[in-house]
Image 1 (cartoon, rainbow, N blue to C red):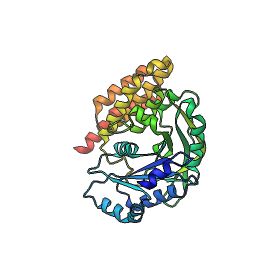
Image 2: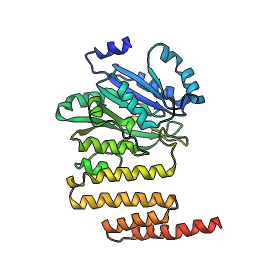
Image 3: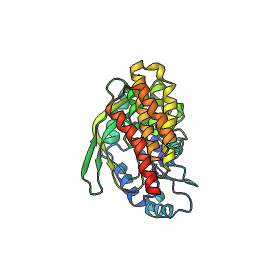
Image 4: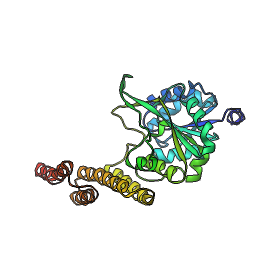
Length: 318
């Protein structure tokens, strides 16, 4: 605790890096090392173990992190039960001492200058209402090869753009802790918590900026992500909660943008309901698609999938 307090007295603002971990003991150490190797040194690391008390992964984590814990290099917090990445991040935010908060999934890694460059940008702009800065990232495979690049940027309509797609995942963020506390952190919802938080940041009057460099490696692999241990229905529920929240802010958009947002939500949910074999709900979303966008070849293709896709599945089950 004394070491954490000393860091708070540094002339450079303290950054708390929160790493929720679930079923990936073998990858966690690499994530921690990437934080320890930052050019920006005034950092505290908070690991939230979300495996549950009796999990074999918790035992593995304690063994692998033994030296870090005993030397107070990290603050290790163990959840009694698995509660998910979003609520684990909230625990980290509440425990953090830093002026700024960064998040890191346990299978992702930072490039060495990630924190330094983001702190510089937010420090220069925090008085102008900036609450979050993000960066670009590389998608890499398990051999370290770059397989895609994410260079998403807002083009002038941040509220609209945050409603229609995920600009940046949480590992790319650096946030003002005070802002996160002011708006209540991540919502306790089945999925899409990061998308909703971005929308809430903007609707609460905060600005978002970008360090236009690829400063995070996002690992693509076949194992579970921190938030992927959920049934398909919870993904649908998350999209519905997100849509309902966004609808409360439609008055800030013009009619054409509202129609586009509604169309995209309906299309996404239509596909999700097709995957759940829920024909009635898929058709309801399809009607919303038509209401908000004129009939097109793509819409016809979707109708075909609803009708014949379900028939094919039923035939296979006979």
